[in-house]
Figure: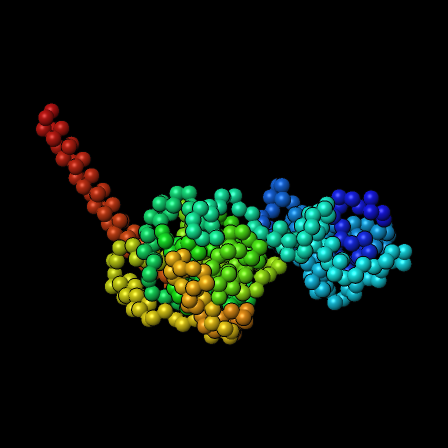
Length: 446
């Protein structure tokens, strides 16, 4: 096929042709009904963002996360097929499917040297027309940098932008205060959420964080030595600007975080994924997030979304348990028991291997180079997650604790309904007595 015939189709390398053995059969594709988000960029599918299948891995992706690649098909010959960015990036990094050996170059065309081929692919990632210049990192920035629709303000003394302010921030803070959660002792249910996030996403650092006026506070964390950071360096401040999850595959390639001290300092944060903790009223209180010191190509955000929903449910249960009127001694004993258990000091960070890295709470008031190493735990940062309790056991523990809270609330609600029933009966009796008195008064007047 001539280059003219491929113009504007974003193919990858005229000599790099896929064979039928490298393509996944349609029967093995992931079903459309199993994916409601793009497997690569994790954006929701909509009427305008339609579903497509990667012909190489069979995953469901959006059109923006695919390029067309030449393939030699047995019946129709050479044609163009869709391949997702993850498969193409793996090929560019020399990590293609081992079952699909690289095809030999055609006899009529000289094969370009590998570095040039990789460079050409990066150009096509960055611009489908292939007219832009750059290397693979340019593609990564263009492909992996999440979209955001709020302006960045650099009008201060630091090279990274100011933390954005959420519309209706004062109302959001009032809702946050109503939960009375800030600066409370650790609780097992939130610790379990962190463990699940860390293990599910293979990340050395995870936290359940809440954002107030000037800080991001960690209700629970894995791999962090501090329990808060200034809002001025918080990733969460950006994440709560949208109800959608925020994924930053490489922080060095995102202008919001490229100069952030958590990225440029000793912590060297390169990957972030966070799902907002959203109240039923639509207010975003914080996030369930993970950090890694290595950039990534893909991220399954569904697990974080589920965990953020669990965190919100437990915050509501906790709030209702404290606010509900105490009508029996059993409820008092349960709540007090929980409080006594929560008096234990915050658990130490998980014993992950690595070098000590971190940043000071007062990082904004200091030069970036003077940041102390006290954010990330001394043994975190090499991307290795230690084996903890089995996932099934942790989930059952989490569900049991949620069930206990629901049973406690049900008991309190039952007592309330009983009391309300008695009050209703008394009111009915009073109404009947009043009616009789009125009837007697009417008879006397007549």
